[in-house]
Each structure stands twice: as structure tokens, then as C-alpha cells.
Image (cartoon, rainbow, N blue to C red):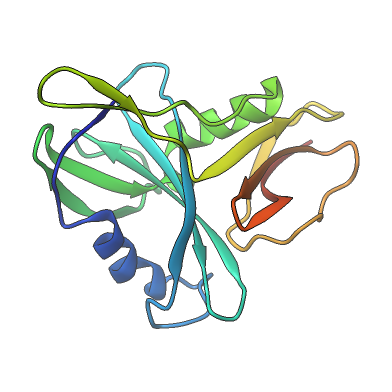
Length: 186
């Protein structure tokens, strides 16, 4: 359940500050737009996960997963992007999902089970809820092999996987052909 809330800074502001400083991003400018996004559910209900697809003017598309936590993550290698104030939940620590075990487990589980993005609902102050459609759709495709190692792709390239590969693919309104976000390999 999402909350009808105000965020400071906004997700867009956090992304604009962090993304251009990453080695995998080809510019030192925040020259991207959000093409789509989707969420996975944390089975424990503690961590918010959200995947952003960022499009550049040159046609490049980048996979940027975020996790939102109510306390700092004590995990070696976890990358803190920043903190934000959530008007309903208080302080939130925002991590690069590629370094957060909850996000990585959700992706691996979606691939292994043929899962997909979570349905999203916003809870309003009066207690009512409204469904919020995802602007991107993710689908796990179980493949051959044991899939012990998860490889996330930051830059999306269409059709780069074998026919028996265990992958998570994504589509969005302007791009109905599946692009690979992650692959489980042996």
C-alpha cells in the first residue's frame, strides 16, 4: 500500500543528484526522463522497492532500482543514495536497489516463479484506496539451469539473452518489446 504523501526531496530530485555521478551513466548531467516505473512487494512488508526506467535523449534506457527503508541498512556494500522525509512515514533511507538484498531477492524470485510487478494502491487520508497502474510492466521468465547468480543490467538492450535464459524483462508504453533487466545464471 502506498501513501498519499509529500516527499522531500522528491524521488526525481534524488535521482537527478545521484544518477549523473554513477560510472554506468554516460553523462554528468541529469539529462533523462522517467519512462516508466514499477514496484515489487517485500514479503516482510518493511522495505519499499521501486524500479525506474530512465530514458536519455540519445535513446539509451537505464535501469535504476531504489529501496526505501525506515532505518539505515547495515549491509556491507549497500549504497545509500540519500534520505527523504515522507509526510506519512517519516524519515526514509533510500538505497540503490542493486545493492539491497530485499530488491535482489525480489528480482530473483520473480524470475524463478514467472512473477511480475506488484499491483499498486494508494491509501488516502480518509481511508479510501485507489489503484495506481504501473507505467512499466515486469515479467519473470524462468529458464534452464539453477540460476544461482543474479546479474542486473543498468543499460537496457533489447533481445540480448538466449532462448532458455532465466530473465526479468520489462516493457513500457512506448516500448512494447521486452528488454532484459536481470538474468539468473549458473
